[in-house]
Every structure is written in C-alpha cells, then in structure tokens.
Image (cartoon, rainbow, N blue to C red; front, side, top):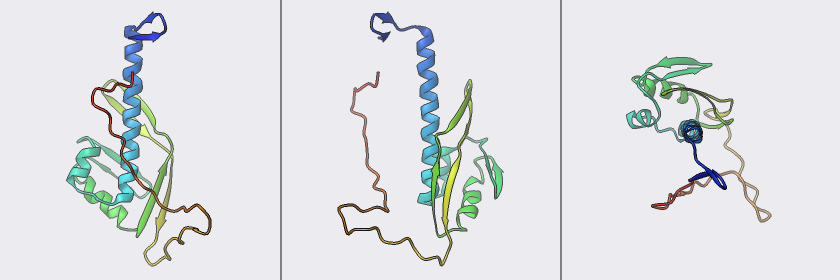
Length: 146
C-alpha cells in the first residue's frame, strides 16, 4: 500500500491512520450517545455500549462517576422532559495512548410535559420536513476503505 503515487507507506503514516481512526471512532461514539438520549432507552446494555467502568458524566444539572449508576442518573435527568432533540458539534477528541477525552458543544431542545406538540410538516408543495428516517449502510464483506 502507498501513501501517494510512487511512495511506500511508512510507519509514520500507519500511526497517523491509527490516530485518525481512533478520533473518528470516538466522534461516532459521541454521536451515538447524543442520539441515544433522544431514543430514551436507558438500561445496562445501553450503558455498556457507551461507557467504560470509570466514565465521568458532567452536565449543568449534575454529574456522575462510573458506569454503575449511569442508567439511573441519566433517567433522572431525561424524565424531566416529554421529548428531546440533541444536536452536537463535531467532537473534540484528545488522545493520550489508550485514554481519551471527548467533548462537544451542544444545542438541546426539550419539550416540556403539557406543551403543544410540534406543528405538522408543511405538505402543500413537494417537500415535507419534521422527521428523521434512519437507514443502514452495511459494510460489504471484504471491502476496504484504504
């Protein structure tokens, strides 16, 4: 494999690829976390899929340390709202060997209980807005991004 036409790949480029892959994986983790807040399913499987044993969750409404209790902590916060939408900036990832710090800016919308629901999407033209439709993008067996 080569870095550029005619140049052999080096150990330095392999390290850079590993670094960028780690950053991308951690950015994906942050996006999955924010999407999970809106989905509202908080259980042990949820916590294991997102957090290490020593996770530290810090929010304006409170903080929590450790995966144990993260489910109850998150439920306590999220039960305040009838619905939410979290939109995060790209994650700021600082790598330090096998440890990382991940942070992002966030715009969060919270629907209070008893509030009128969102208006129905405009449908008088050829467009409609107001929903998301998740879809899959499976990796083809044997395919490579390199």
